[in-house]
Amino acid sequence: MTIPKTPRAFPTPMDIKMIVSDVDGTLLDSHHLLPTTNPTHKIIRKIREVYPDLPVIISTGKQHRSTAELREQLDLHKFPCCHLNGNVIYNPKGEVVSESGLDKSIVRRVYDEMKAIGTSVFVYDYTTVYQLYHGEGDSGQWAQILRGYGELVVEGAEGIMEKIEAGELNPIKMAICQDAVTIASPKTILESKFAKEDFALTQALPFCVELIPSAHNKGTALIRLLKYWNETAAEPIGPDNIITFGDGENDVSMFRVSGMSVAMGNAMETARSEAIFSTDSNDEGGVGTFLEKVFWPTMN
Image 1 (cartoon, one colour):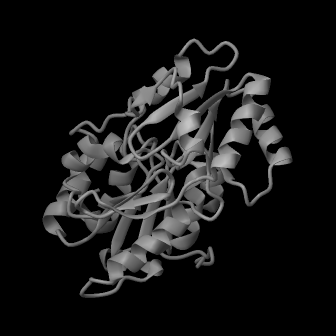
Image 2 (tube, rainbow, N blue to C red):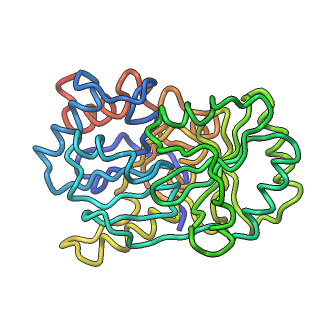
């Protein structure tokens, strides 16, 4: 399901039946926070009060535990959410309703290839990020940066590969980290040595390339979530009435599914070129400033 990208009028409150947003670089500022003074915090809280049944969904590459504080801040506990780039969907109780993962043999091959060229390797399960290999010049900085995004990162994860190969740990996604100026090199190796069916490459951070199951992304997750939502909804929602916000390459797939898509002012060019609308940066509260223009235009 893909909505053709065509010009459309600026949305009205009646047009929007579901709000879906990325987290890092979108809802959160560049310090990975959402201050109460940020327009995004103010307006989403106001939407939750004035339109309590309008679903506000987070769709992120982060793990569920990493967004607990954000869900509390914005009062999002009554809604489902999409995590790990669409590979795990949770219901409002925090229970998994849909999941996928990488083939364990592919994880081993990626690990071997990246280790051979000195690129740091991470693997994610539901709750934890395990660093499988410290690349050349990696003194722990990549793990520390990921922790800054709220991830629980375990370095020196001995035995994790063995647990993956024994089927004791589900590798939902992988990530390789290297300096932004050279990250294209390992990415090219992955593209040349693996089949498209093995995984899909996506990027939300300049120093990090993520590997996710090829059949799943934020777009396919949105389709599955919409089906899940409509099973019990009093009034089914169609994709044309969904508005999505994002800043990264990994947000493009959900832009293509939703009828309304908004790129942040700080967005990667790939996201900018795919979005129908644009807004201010995350530090300026771009999600909030856009939604304020939709729901309370006279306040501007």
